[in-house]
Length: 101
Image 1 (spheres, rainbow, N blue to C red):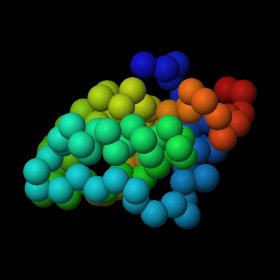
Image 2: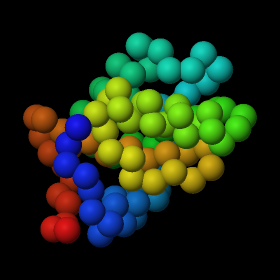
Image 3: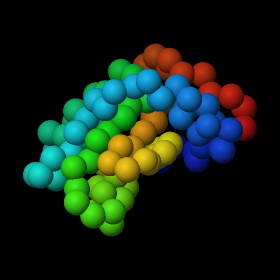
C-alpha cells in the first residue's frame, strides 16, 4: 500500500471530493472481482472516488470499505454513513497534487 496520508492531505482530499457523485456502488452481492476491477479503473482514471455501500449495519459497511480499500491498494480518506472516499495516486498521469504534510 502507498504511504499513509497526513491529516492536512486528507482534509484537502475531502474538500476535493465534496462535490463528487459516487462512482462505484456495492450492492447485495457484496465485493466481487468485477467490482474491484471497476474500482481499480475508476481510481486509475480519477484518483479520488466516492463509493456507496448498501449494507444494513455499520460493522458490515466498515468491513466492506476496508476490504475494498485493501484490494484496490487505496487510502481511505473519509467515511460518512454509506459513502466512503478512496484515493490512490495514478501510475500513468497523476491529477491530484497533494499538499506537503
